[in-house]
Image (tube, rainbow over all chains, first blue to last red; front, side, top):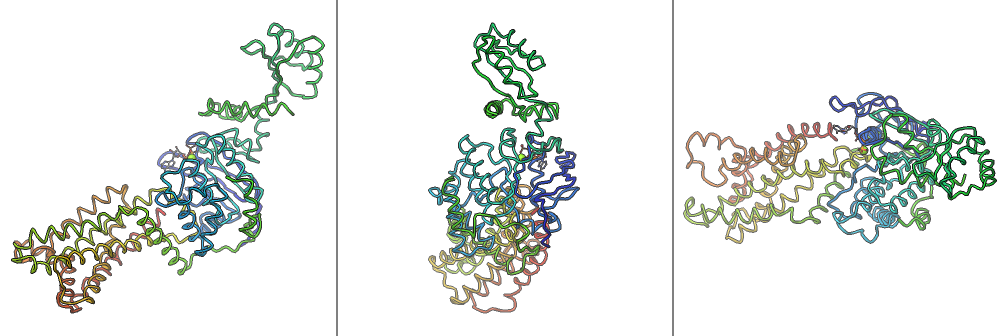
Length: 335
Length: 284
Ligand SMILES: Nc1ncnc2c1ncn2[C@@H]1O[C@H](COP(=O)(O)OP(=O)(O)OP(=O)(O)O)[C@@H](O)[C@H]1O
Ligand SMILES: [Mg+2]
């Protein structure tokens, strides 16, 4: 039984149809043990349906999947002992308090009365829910519900955790805490498969990413690999004096060998950057020509660009996400 | 999330900070019978917790016995038996059966509501017996029947009903009714599993239940009815249950006739339990 498998998740050609709608249309996934794997896709791409099949909640119409080498259909009960599932919508009992929920699930997982109490208390403390422990769930905020839901998934300390859109609807601070928790889980040896609509989130958290669209994996790789598919980074310069933009562009073209562009607000120029070594030369040239810089940044392609280039259409939440991707690409400037 | 204190916490509560890898775990693909029973009991415990959290869901089982007993006794008492006191031995068993069986509808509606909730997804992702949420719900519902039974007897007692059979007859009759209601709740559980919404379960159940409980000997003697109706009333299983309960309460005799409803209950369970379980497993 205990076949040692280096793959936490191995899915081959998973298919699920609802009526005439092929919600999942031949998905292959390989998730290495001990890593974070991000499944990225817009609304209705089939993320939840895929997770449901991997977590034994839905029967695939075709294809197969194995969790640590155990088939999700033939060995469903074994698989359930190895996974923790935090669904897109909180799967806790609204009629009970937080403590009662955790005790209930602990008891179902075979813990004794006392052990279950201790476990519940520890988890509530770990997730900062101690004060709200005995309050009815009806009055919980979305973030508290999410945390309780995740706590419930960790009772049995499963080696594989499914997180379906763990940060959707969370405020930036709570989202950062969720990221921290996910990193801690992985540091403890867990494997995490998460779905997200936030391109930035997959980039930050996941070791590897699968981009899915209309039930198919349209791209797979590390964040950097995916970005490399789109093209190189670009250099962005904001000039002290807008009138010098043309001169700056000329210099850039001479030094870097490619033509740059001038943005709508005339003080900004953007030049494709294939060789970072040459940046120094450019900067020296600019200084020699007395062109003062206000700001300087390297713009790495965002996963948004990836999505656009692969599927030929922007993600639905591009606008909302734009702010996120600019902050993350600014960090690229230090490189 | 107290991220700074968390690592020590985990170290204290579990063997170490690291997760036991999948291949080092003892895993099995089957749930044993004892585990199934334990999971069902835990699920029943969940049902009790819910009752404690939302006592208002007991309104029907508390108010119905009280209101019906008072109402029916004073409305029909004089007309049917001459006076209230001599009507009580007729009406109390009738109301008892009617109330408890009506209560068993709730099994179906609650099951449907429960299965539509998010928490059911968690149950389905846990390594527990598939059947536990269903069996647990059916188990917890016997509490409701016990409450309805007790209240009906208490109301009867207050109004002056003293069963000839004594306390054992009361207990025996109560158990008889509860067992039969439990058996019947499998029928409603079946509707609960296959129906699309809780209100449709309620609708179907009422349509079945209304003629069964009212076209019976629960409130009026059969010989006052037209003959075509007598035919139905006499084959109606609810009538047989009412008769048995009356016999037990008023004579104290547990005759073989009194146990007839138990056979009926067994037949219902034999038919509907597998049907319900199969339909349920297909969805669970
Ligand atoms: N139970 C169901 N019955 C019918 N259609 C379904 C069902 N579940 C999902 N679908 C359909 O399958 C497709 C994929 O849905 P899914 O929930 O997997 O998408 P998703 O990627 O999780 O989207 P979101 O980001 O909105 O959560 C959608 O078109 C959806 O309408
Ligand atoms: Mg989803």
